[in-house]
Image (tube, rainbow, N blue to C red; front, side):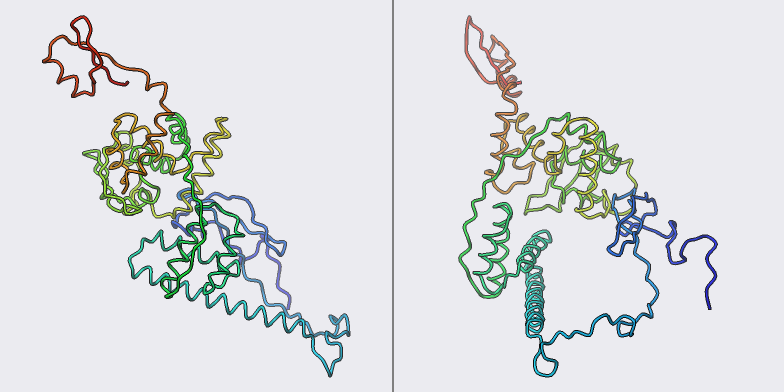
Length: 404
């Protein structure tokens, strides 16, 4: 019995716009973001969340079961057989292909099982969540390239052929070294020549342009990075209990890379931006993932670079705010120990990079001095307290100077 056609012309299985919610934050404030083509020639609706910026697609509705059978007489197009002789031989090539594919699948499953055990061992040893994710992803990449994790030579061969930076090659080698140690094995890791490149330092105006051109939530996040020089993960995990709006302070206890806990004095501008944000959960900037937050920022950055005609904005990553603050802070204080404590570095060697950058970025200002001349020795302590240094003496006057 045939069904009557629908008067609306739409399928009853298609979800309505009111029933769609963001899988990341649960919001119903969505934009339609085009159609996503599928391999079968059909398409599904794409959506963009206005709250967290996640882009996702609708699930394709299930199709009705087909009554078509492959063995019907009308669909038999040839009487040829795969075998050379139906009763005496088999297609050995096809059999061998299936056997090799099956063995490779089993090998990968065994390798992934060992990775799961390795991750569990790292969790028991209290490794950071970011380190666990990085190392497990590195081992997964080796498995995808067909490496046997129990054969170090195959891993060396894959690392030699891998097209990636020396820094990432070093991370993969470090992850595999720890994996072998947990298995009771050793290897001689390949030499990785890792050179730390000098970071890109934008101007303060360029950072302010990015902050002004983004939404309320992203702008507050970027302003916080600019004033505190936190890492992206540290800022993402800030809770409302860490923000003291009365004293204009932010406390950071959940640090990354074994950094020291820190307290930051922030501006009234940042406090106002944080006060205007909705308190939907305990986290200041919500619970969206680092990948989602980065994707939203990079999309907005590209749009602003095109709008303002400034391609330098494309080089400003979320970690660039930390580099800029460290360089500017050293220029203001000339105190590397203070900069080290502000950034939470474990070693002063890491902080020395910003001293080198400051000499080149502010070289025009380094030759400019403020000069004070005094006659009485009683005035000297006051000048030294504000940073003046003795320069020379002439005509009964003592001259002091400090860089502007």
